[in-house]
Length: 397
Image (tube, rainbow, N blue to C red; front, side, top):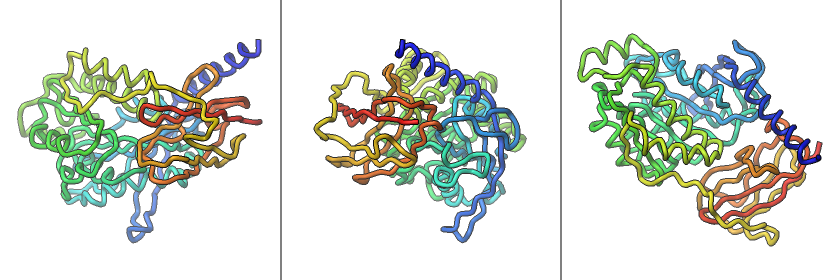
């Protein structure tokens, strides 16, 4: 009876989350980067909300943060397809409006994309998006110029979980050179009929250069350069002056992009192993794309897990958890690890940490109600290569 009741409550929480997350909230905020002479970064923010509209209350939960860079002389408003697609899935999207002129500074734009992630996770994005709702996992994405600048933002950046580019163009400084210092999992989208930033002269070189152990390049058959976004006059005008033209519709390119993008993000930002397998299956079976990949996405579904009663792997305190919990690694090595919260049904309900270890201790914001977790006993699972360690986590009212 108790198990049945817990299961019912859990289902209700999940159902409530999805109900809220169907709505797209929007707010505007001007961030200031004091480290760059108080550089102003006006930004459009889209987030899961309890009701659609401007400055509406954010939905209950903790959501991964994504910063997105626009293309050359393109407006942030051309990317509604992305916020309409991803916000209902439970992501906060930030679109900086900087460097929109005919002489953009790519280095500053990349720095803006990097800054927004840390700033939103630390201080939130105004009253509508408190820091307590910003998750510890994050991605940097971008299209065309913004795609190239994303590599500048991801260079030597251990603060993000993954990066994704769409028809990335080489920048100045070079995104091809910057890719040599990008180690986070990387997904590149290319259109085979892109005449603005053709893959052989742009994305192929970036892919070859990137140091990411897990990297995938998806070529959308017949896809164009501008079709990754909604219609934009400047982009459409530029694409009309060259050839070949796209041979699929914009909506078809959007749908193909969405299928792969959502699976990739669900794994790398939310730890959903089923989506990792779905991504791999789609690569093999889809007739809409071709691809190349360094190696299949690693998803530890058959690892030897041991109870960490002997403190071989990590400690977590305080326990029961409070607003801030500390994770202490007892045998610290510079390896990629992931730490999940697992409920009594064996389901991952939140990713606490996913990064390459650079310290022995990490402090993490932890507000159980924001995670949608009721009082009870959960498992904290650390996955480190082919090993996993687990501890019990107690959550009180």
